[in-house]
Image 1: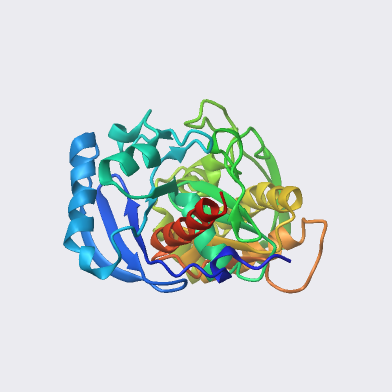
Image 2: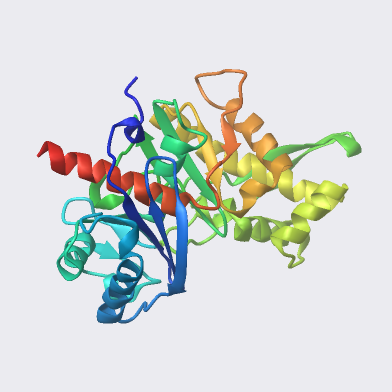
Length: 330
């Protein structure tokens, strides 16, 4: 198995920025596995010149921490097309349609690398998190909705259009599941509609897989509008309605996640996002997915990510070092 890319000897520090729709988090990575948080500033999401100015100001204020040719690597809330590097972002409109890394490299007079935030999270987990030492890491993001990324030997697998690991889309959700209600001493068949998805299809895993999905399932089953936090808290307290919702949720979401594991050959699935912090839910999801995959084993497969707090920045730093090696090899 190839060593993860961050094991390769690149000594130049990398500036890393996690660029979201509201804020830019800025840090310096002096070396692999190391991160120094520096600043957080508002994102000028609608103004390209102001965005360039904000990044230039961050680099200037911390210029004494690294050589003048230290690269900047970005984790971005948006899609980055891998051939031309053209960005698409609903949260940062000013980068849409621009070859982001190339345009910033010209504006900032230094090497710039950029990737989607889920891809950077995947790089962080594959190289410096739960996926370290695994040949194939599939990261599942389970927050408001769901997303993902794929790394092979510590490097991103970047498909056509930059879409890889997006297990949340496609009309694949079951419409009928059977759950065991042990307390009632019976099984129950639940029928679920194929809910419309923001991507234009119906029945996507994204409609039921994240926090909003749990709420939709609960509303369908009970007629009540409750938050995912309240539903999961009720489940852990033993509430019957909440337990029914969670059992249906696990039946629905474990199928597409198991399919993703079978297709990619992943030997570890780190989970990021808010749902990953609910340990009992992750334990049950792991058990359900492992019962559905072809390559059966006893150790945990679906696990909480280790880099949930700083995955974007860590992954951006990994991206920067990998980009430098490619430049050196060219």
